[in-house]
Image (cartoon, rainbow, N blue to C red; front, side):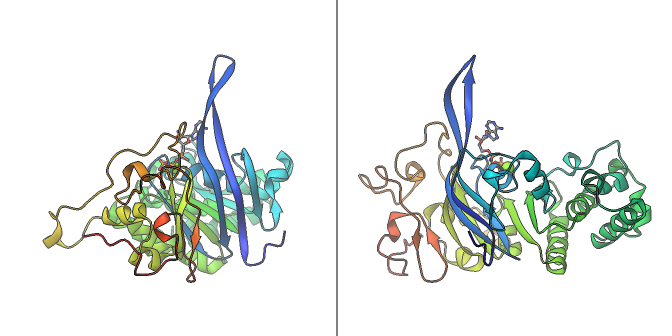
Length: 338
Ligand SMILES: Nc1ncnc2c1ncn2[C@@H]1O[C@H](COP(=O)(O)OP(=O)(O)OP(=O)(O)O)[C@@H](O)[C@H]1O
Ligand SMILES: [Mg+2]
């Protein structure tokens, strides 16, 4: 398989977690259920969806932290599902991860220097002097200046934003090609979020990185990502260039997500906004047909509840899994909402 312009290619990827009772498996949580997706070299792809939709599981599968139940995951042309644990370890040198909570990547008992240096030590990269230079360079890249000063600190001595900068330094220390940033700014004050995302963008440009940005927040996805993939109950329901998806959302679920973005205009602050009604479906026994139909205002009985809609494609790189677009995606058949 040639990778071309894509660094990641997913083909019908499924990740099912078994539910065990005593010694038998009584069912599966279908966290990721048939995802096909490509991530282009050098882009930021946002993966957006509600809590429990399978975003983190999909991100972990791409970097080999979770083995898929079925399907193929190509990383730079190599099907990682066929790799041994040893080979996967080699691959992980080429990827970095940033989590929501910097404490999960920064050991509270380690200095910032030791935490940032650790991936180099584990992967036996460089001698002591070279590693020191690389750590200080990474700290300076994430604007923890002067780097010497921050290197000697412990995580609890830093602010939330500074801790996340240190976590980013750790993620980029081994010069990865690909980074999974899983809700990297969710725990930070709103005022610092944009600052951290701007920094990530800067680093991405400087080092030609590809980033999978996992979030439930459409507003930051719009600001940060080149393309947006919308995930609902283990499936991708819409995908396209960020601006196009935000300005002209096709899937009824995407439309609801966008309407749920708080309106910054004080005049509209108390305007009643339609939010998504009901709960996300069970991933153990998902609804037949389209998984969104029980919450969908455009539900077509005898159609949406029978067979799952495929991903329909339009000319402008847009994909949408909804029968409203069966006959093509045009302004005329786009559902209008008041
Ligand atoms: N190791 C696991 N074992 C069993 N079930 C799991 C495991 N990891 C995730 N799940 C389940 O898979 C589903 C998807 O979880 P996941 O963490 O991928 O969602 P998410 O979209 O990242 O949610 P959030 O926005 O809350 O982080 C959930 O129902 C979760 O409980
Ligand atoms: Mg998650």
